[in-house]
Length: 117
Image (cartoon, rainbow, N blue to C red):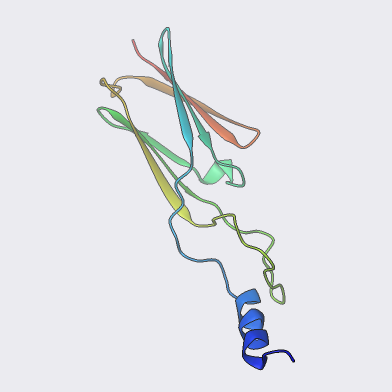
């Protein structure tokens, strides 16, 4: 005989919206002949909404990944991808304040090139 409480809990769980947990995207940092290359895993983030800043010794990337598939009447069966605002700060062992910055967004990766003079 099914437990009526268990059925109720499953129904409620399927209607739960994503949590407000913070998202911390993964990043790789490479040293090149003329500076640094940073690759940040940002699948599902709109490139137009990214903010990129440099200060003395760090690079900061901010943005938000939104669940564009969620619509009224939908319920979740499984929820593993985090949708929320993020801020990723990457420290460097030297000053990058005067570096020139270029970036590209390719296959879900933000590629930032810092050219040091």
